[in-house]
Length: 311
Image (cartoon, rainbow, N blue to C red; front, top):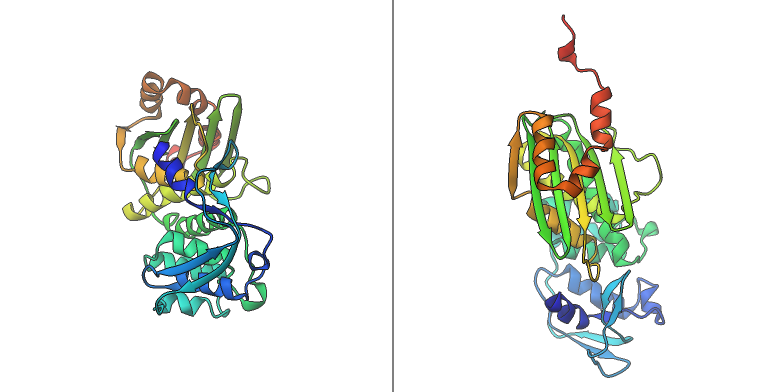
């Protein structure tokens, strides 16, 4: 945590006093946008309302670590900016945001670059362009890309065995179970008295407007679907996230990257659900308590299989 705090404390908390936060056509916004459109890092000079001091970061149990609040008054680029052609193409106001995000993702553009340009209101049809908070665009990005990947993996063959993956970092323990069935996705989160879960079946539709696990739902789904796409397979997915001693939340990007790490470390492969449950009970008792009441397993039990019938 200490290294993360040092880094976050050097960030600036954006002010809402200035119009540049609310409008997309000011000089400051234009220059910031040029920086994010660039092919490589750009050197610039900035001027703030007050002298920069990084000795008073803001700590919040809800928002994590935030840097000093200070109004940006002026920014000047110290060099000519070379803009990536693919990015410029999608900022002309002629393509929808979803199309732009997917193409840039497939071309390997940096996720942070895509997300910040979306936050700056650079993608989408001109009349619909808006600046929005970065925390919204992170989840929008995760949702768009995971739904795009889902449209690909649901055409693939089902995995052959039950698979278990695990990753633990900064008070978070993620247990991932892949089941040899058609796609469904379930996320459990447990943090002491707080519990939440979300489930979607093959149709990928929540029964309510927004996931109870918020942005973690889309972030964790993205990490798994990337791996299944590489393998050209599909599966039913259960993720159980147990949280202890999580001093300050690190956001949904932490969840996405944790899942990407978890999927690299297979700790078990089994032929039956019974073996999978026994392994989980023996090694992850808290996770097991949520596994046995999983909606995914309930739905699988209800479904009749073609192999049950004689033709």
